[in-house]
Amino acid sequence: MEKFKVKISRILKIISFTLMLSIVSLLTSIAHANPTVSSVSIHSANSVLIVTFSESVYNTSDGTGNLEVADFALSVTGGTATLNSVTPRSIARISQSMWALMFDTSGIADGSEVITVIPANNTSIFDSAGNAAAEAQSNNTATFNLK
Image (cartoon, rainbow, N blue to C red; front, side, top):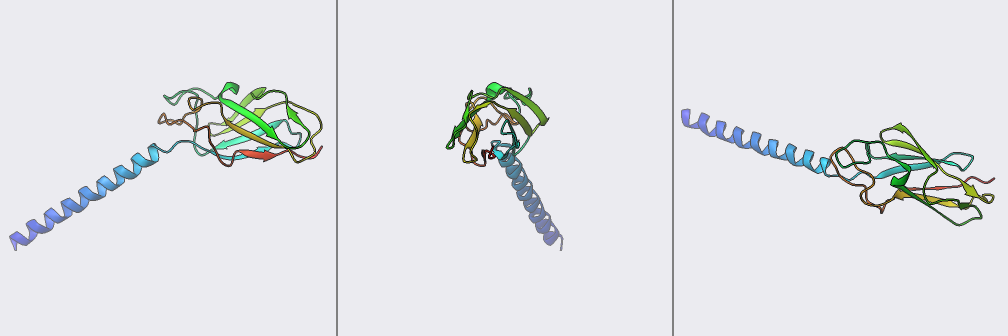
């Protein structure tokens, strides 16, 4: 009977250790996920973008500092309105994962313009673990409103 208890004790230790390794592996993979743009919406006046990230973001790799206009690049395709600058005019933090980017355009929007926002480079935007947001993003466009 004593031999049986020792075997069960060893089996439980192995299971506990395996479970612990699985949890550490899961937490490590979560900590290594790069922040991404999860959505972009545009204000009805076609002058403000609300950019939402998958997690809190910062402008330094040590997870501090609010984002700045130089951390973003904008572009517009289609339609008749054009951007006055590829850099936002100003920025406002709504939350650490949601940012308002103000920008100016020339021309009257016909509603077919698509604005795209990306990190200015791969050292512009970071999460708290120091993972950089890639320049290539999805969910990072919005369509202008007809004016």
